[in-house]
Image (cartoon, rainbow, N blue to C red):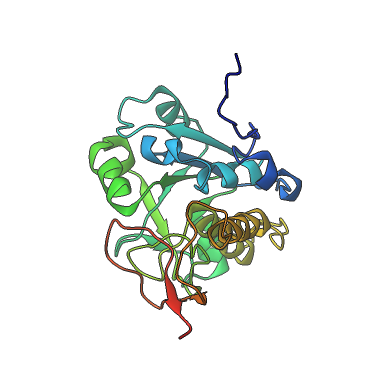
Length: 242
């Protein structure tokens, strides 16, 4: 008797993408003075294939991922916060944050120190706000932020606003600002290449007629929107060329 088995895709267990769209050949780890701690929401962890938290960590030697929602009693987080002669910061916008974009180099160097830890909340904005609301230890951290002057390339997702960046784009921006402040010397030229390759793979898949996510309307082209919908819906947007 012949039994048909469901065909499964072979997955890369490093980048968590299918082997056919593996981005590992484009990964080039940077050695940074700054240590990045990516606090990943469980929902983000489950969709790691399209998330950028894992990708960001793969690009940085001085980084780690900690999954959770409330980090108040998280042993690893508190261990980092209690390291002597080291300062920790939370990358989060707000009027009381230290804006890396508007400060002089000397101010950045004095404020950040030589080997800072920067905590990053990796999840949707609602998830990030909940993580911060629950995590009393993170609430006590000094915050850093930046003025975003670029538009996110994450066009396969819809963010609350066009100025919202993915985790890897945020870290890329921070690294460049820290370079200007004299705290980093790493070359960030190729930092976003894995991210750009992932987007290209996803677009190819969505525009492939054999794909289950193919948009059936003929003659479609991608809309680049200035503002993304304030909605939980995250579908790629098309318009007809009629």
